[in-house]
Length: 270
Image (tube, rainbow, N blue to C red; front, top):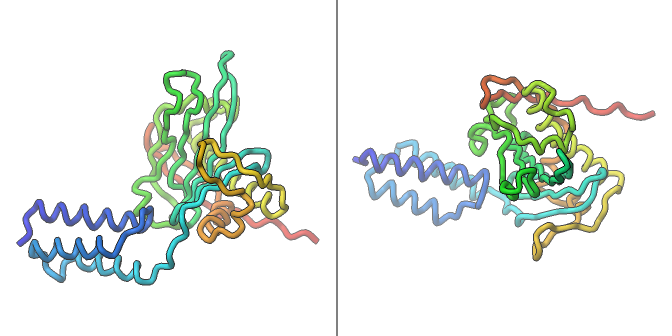
């Protein structure tokens, strides 16, 4: 019979493999075989849930279409320099903003990660040039959907963790941002990502894209934004994200509920 420690190890092993099928890196067949061997070597019943979950993972690998390599796009659209990272089954859209406060200049990068169904996984802020120099380069997760790697992808409502004290550099996005209620600020931070996606898609549709990319990291290969039109992972996700709008209900200083609704499609022109 497996010991308590063996059961705990098996649970962590299977959950990690399941998480990686959603978020990457890809699971190899040999890793599933190794997990099978661990269960057999420690006398787990073949009828246990662990064997069933590994069987589902094997079937998923067997029928999975090989995912394209990670792709990194950059360029100008809708007046902003945008970076889009297409990674396995999700997309990260990043935009940089500059500003000034009390005669200090600053620069931030705001990133939204969207899952396969266009829902938010998290909003992240990177302080490229903070108003407090000692924080230059720091990362802050502003909002993170709880257990997003394993959550149902097309959720309508989800619990999320919110940073208790939001960085003041967010005023680079809106000078009066902190005059609004916290729930409205958090909803706006989510929706700014969805609206940026919609602006990007409109720029692609109307060919208002600067085809030249600008990589912030020397030596990094970055494709022009216009090549997103043929990305089999990113384009469907972006289209789903552009059709969504969120509302936020604050439950506590660090916990909120995010709710989604589909936007009405634009009226057809005569």
